[in-house]
Image (cartoon, rainbow, N blue to C red; front, side, top):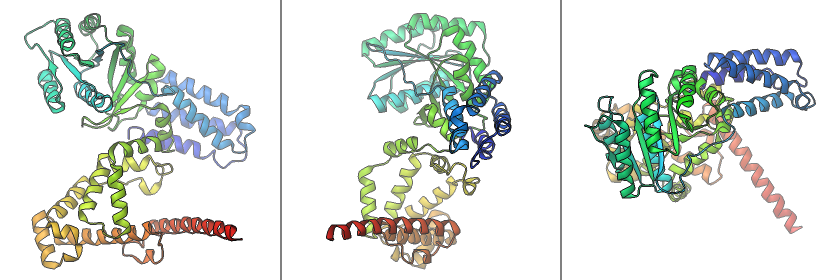
Amino acid sequence: MAFENLSERLQKALRNLTGKGKISEEDINAASREIRLALLEADVNFKVVKDFIKTIKKRALGQEVQESLTPGQQVIKIVNEELTKMMGEEAVGLTKSPHIPTVIMMVGLQGTGKTTTVGKLAYRLMKEEKARPFLIAGDIYRPAAIDQLKQIGADLNVPVFSEPDEKNVAKIVEDGLAEAAVHRNDYVIIDTAGRLEIDEPLMKELEEVKAVSQPDNILLVVDAMTGQAAADVAKTFNERLDVTGVILTKLDGDTRGGAALSIRAITGKPILFTGQGEKLTDLEVFHPDRMASRILGMGDMLTLIEKAQQDYDAKQAEKVAQKMRENTFDFNDFIDQLEQVQKMGPLDEIMKMIPGMANNPQLKNFSIDEKQIAHTKAIVYSMTPAEREDESLLNPSRRRRIAAGSGVPIVEVNRMIKEFKTAKDMMSKVTKGNFKDLEKLPGMNSPMAKMAMRRMGKSFKKKKAKKMKKVKRFHS
């Protein structure tokens, strides 16, 4: 996550305030210093930081905190609210034209991922609105830019308009819009040229394209990894073109995240989407409140739920739950579940969306090795259909054959089968509400596993006691 270091620093600064019955001005000043340093190191604009700290101190020393029973929690609430306000308070969508097509003009410097983002946005519109987008290749300078957009169009089965021999970009856009009107496309997305840095010829060309296309949306694509420089670029583009919104790309890279915290405050324009990954599915709506919550280590359950609803098959999930109860869960189900979870994104990022997990020391170095997942799949795919349905068939000779077929050592095959059996037994017991002797299962002796089982057991006992109480009350 882009904000990993910032998140850690902010949580550390606020940790000293929690649990205190009363907070002094000295406590607030100390926390404010740490927050200011954390934001500046994350490459947030200096003026933005200055205004943010001033507001935090004023509110933290006010009546709402000083008279609170939990002043530390109140300060965290204030920081959360002000972070959200800094990034725009609420999610903003595209401006829709009252008649088709809605025209979207994409602008930005070279190397920000603009052309890929055109494809991601087209995919999102197709999936969410059943839209029929039309792409115009307006980047005639970068080698292979037109070919790249055509390949994206082919992958999505979306038309791409280009005129490779035409040197007037405004003319290309004008002809492309006429073509889109004939086919009555819902959206037209214009991919424009970028430069390594802002220059006058670039700006003049973009102004000509804007005049010809009269776009409903001018979206500035900004590389989050450039930090504060991204906010400066946004300011210049906005002054010349009056952009309607921003898309932050490469938010999953090794970046300090300052761009997301500075752009809205400097330009007054909202961040609409964030790009986190290379796939055409990797474009998310930017929710300032959820991002603030994630930065402060408070999780992001709403996004996690949305991901699950979007990528998880409810009927299949119920079918698997039934198989778990009946203890008939097999390797076919295992692979299916693995692939469904993978669709939601990297598991370490998903875990951090769960409240309390983001700053859990157990997860600090938590990562999932994609190679290990590939090995697991290879092992299962090397089994016969009968072996996948019944693991009891997996005798030593069959395991040696599977190891040879999947290209992994026999010890890895044995370990995977053992872990599968353990998980299967555990799932069967838990789905039936049976926690007795669960800790005796192989692999269930780790402190984390024991703690989880104890909590699950207590929760189940409480529910059972509550139910029995109701029954007794009814009979009496």
